[in-house]
Image (cartoon, rainbow, N blue to C red):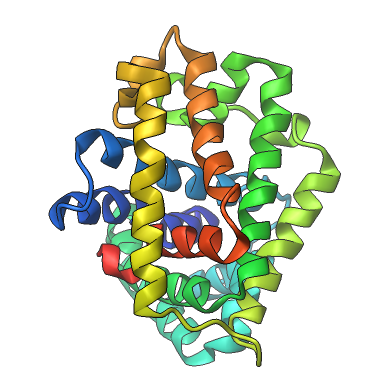
Length: 276
């Protein structure tokens, strides 16, 4: 079983359903706006897939399943922070995953079991991260997308929507300097959320973030028309790869144009536990 992939899928996988489903459930935005918000999940998975699924040659012959899982955790910078902050949760996840594997459970079943635990912790940390850390998190992400777009529209589309036409190996396309800052930023955000300057989300922040998001969505619909549906059904982006990449970058560019506190508020809202 590929424990590195299990960890990443468990960490990121639920965001897609949470972000789109909850906005529609609460009636906050319509179907088109919901499609725009879907971009968050794509970007979130892409960030971690790029940095933590890079193949590593690490012989595991002779190791028990628990040792292999533990090794995968130690090799992942974000899980290093989780181990430091939540040792009990870390051991619980290891024990549960190995037990399920020994019982013959599939990789997907293990992912489904550990996913809510990891996701709940990560979203909680994002809510508590200072504004500067949240903003930097998204800025570097946009740099990654822009770097791949310079190579070509098709590469950018595959980078954002690997399930449609097959993904790419971003290691050869994204500058090492950007990747290094991404890794540092991820760990910094997690630790800052646990530090003395951690953020507290207020009801006023949530309301303002919702208003900002609702104000941004119509502009995207006006600029891209029916092509906005690519975000809900990436298959519609075949033949429109350039437009698909532009929509993703446009959304986050508009969010980051907001004053720092408000931009951070929108990001927190779109990835908050309330979306569950």
